[in-house]
Amino acid sequence: MDIYYNGKVFTGDKELQQAFVVENSKFIYVGNNKNALKYKNENSTLTNLKEKFVCAGFNDSHMHVLGYGYSLNMIDLTKTTSSLEEMKNAIKEYINSNNLRENEWVYGRGWNHDYFNDVNRFPTKDDLDEISTEYPICIIRTCGHICIVNSKALELSGINKNTLQIEGGQFDIDENNEPNGIFKENALNLIYNKIQNPDKEDIKNMILKACESLNSYGVTSAQTDDFIVFPEIDYEVIINAYKELANEGRLTVKIYEQAQLPHKEELENFLSKGYTTGVGNDYFKIGPLKLLGDGSLGARTAYLNEPYADDNSTFGMCTYTQEQFDDMVELAHKNNMQVAIHAIGDKAMDMVVNSIEKALDKYPRDNHRHGVVHCQLTNSDLLNRFRDLKLHAYIQSIFLDYDINIVEDRIGVDRAKTSYNFNTLFKETTMSNGSDCPVELPNVLNGIYCAVTRKTLNGKGPFLPNQALSVKDAILSFTRNGAYASFEENLKGDIAVGKAADFVLLSDNLLDIDVDKIKDVKVLKTFLDGRCVYSLS
Image (cartoon, rainbow, N blue to C red; front, side):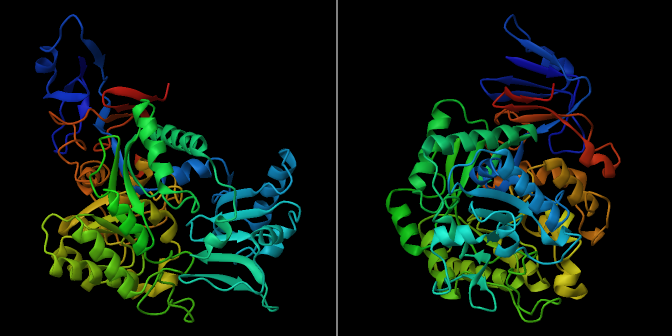
């Protein structure tokens, strides 16, 4: 029995508690110091929290655990790479510093052309050829919806002027009709399918590496889209990797798999094996069907009802037809499977919401908890439909850090006013928060800061301050509401009697500090089922 006392314990109410008691991986008491200490016996461990702030372990309700672990093995090309030239030098340095095998692929992730101070465009194969034509190079934009490759990568992938375009994706061509190295959406698989796949042990190691990092940010639960990180690997390999880690007691993040099954035949096969939402245990469980409906705002591939304000030649890209959405959503819904569909643009969201509404009309079901991942570029009609259909919004408040800089340019001031309406979604439907890591780091405190201040991490803003969350609501979006999204609100997500003892100890009281300082708060310790899985010191 473990007794924690003399703390500032957040339970979801404005009034903080002082203490809690953990036994057999669960909270058995939450309240004041005096009553907590009554549980003391010869086997008790007492911990003085020294007035530190404690809340439930954080739940990232949409990310890519395996993809994050994979990215940790790549060259980090995040926004600290402030120019195309600097990025090229970083890749050159990596190649020169590593003893690469013949034809060994060089991967990087995290570049964003909007942060380049020397050019304002995507890199191309010509830029990467200046680095090397000996090794295949593949660099993935921060959003994950675009990659750039060099000539060697095109050669090894068998891609040339005779290669056909792919449905739901595109690779760009130059004036000679040759691929210029830029691949978007479904066309990414033309490259990814040619890359050597890891084995199950490699996958387990990537998961462990990701979980170790997640714990350092206070994350104890993750709702994760993993099945298509390596398109040629059967999802059973990934499921078994997670199950083995859980059985070995090595999994330090509780996983709710957002099962991306892009085609109807794959979903039918998945369901025929007995998989559906809720199958599994507390450490690894099948969640919703995940579909990728459109692209990203930064890449101008989010699918809009009206053209982009800064490029009226495009509406973005949709990866499914309305009929395909309808078929997939209905199949999942009638088999009691939740759906969570990526949609950033308002047109993509219209299509997704139409499909969910049709499925609910045909097969009515309460408490379906179907939802939309991202919910960025909304309009008044969409917000009302979210409320009326009781849809769940999986938002990423950290996206404001970048998108504040571009949203009004991309879609204009008027459309921006009803976008990123997180407070409306929180109040009128159900909403949970996440990072979409590795698109962004899984830094929950940065996410809470952005949700509350509506500013970038360097203080630009606020953007639509009326859509800010209170600190209390922002914490709930990363705790209780994440558990709700996975039908687990009775199991975790709060420091409450009977729930899993997943909790995080912070350096400062989030409810009592200047909101601009929230991003500077440190995670001191992270506990999973009462066991410490991360300590700063």
